[in-house]
Length: 239
Ligand SMILES: C[S@@+](CC[C@H](N)C(=O)[O-])C[C@H]1O[C@@H](n2cnc3c(N)ncnc32)[C@H](O)[C@@H]1O
Figure 1 (cartoon, helix red, strand yellow):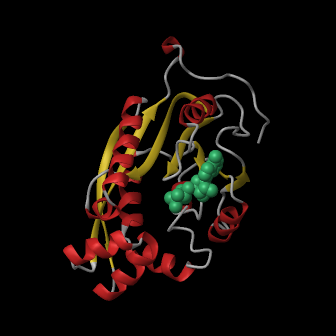
Figure 2 (cartoon, rainbow, N blue to C red):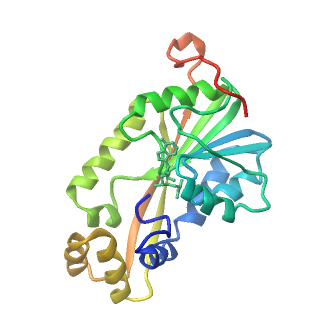
């Protein structure tokens, strides 16, 4: 969860990085406009520091959020105090929910599982009920932010986007967001601390305290039985 946790030795830099970004409200507004979580049983995968969780959960009937990291769950717990969100330490490859027990799955920058993409998708479809939907948020492979991170990262994000599009996902929306730093010097301090010399090189070519980022919102509907690829059907423990 590089760059987003606000924990660790560079906490100050990461906090300044997230403060500069306006993605949260813009992405959330689009999600709430497009994805219907009202009165639904929802599972969030890889909740991290719970960026969108409280707002999405306020519309849901039940909202379970999992993460493998106890440290990030502790951050989420603080942020979600007083909400109905049920936080559970669990791996997305072994979700402790029954087959077909949720109606919506949500994940931002955390799905599929690293090195086990197909398995995590099968496990998500296992817990998703009929007509269920998976909503995902991730980087689009273009925009200043990706250009600053370099060719290799852009290719990696493009491959990620292709994976989604080849696995039942379509792009429901692309949201233009922006990092706005208080000054060019602060942009340099934060971006170079996180992304290294390539950020310095990029800023020397594009000296600006603003950095555009494009975010994709993806949606996939659960395949029905006739498709024959719903994934495993074992029953996991109950929550
Ligand atoms: C980049 S962070 C994104 C966090 C949050 N969703 C956000 O938008 O800020 C990825 C999150 O996925 C979690 N994660 C990674 N692998 C996981 C797994 N196998 N099962 C559950 N969570 C996982 C990490 O602990 C981390 O919180």
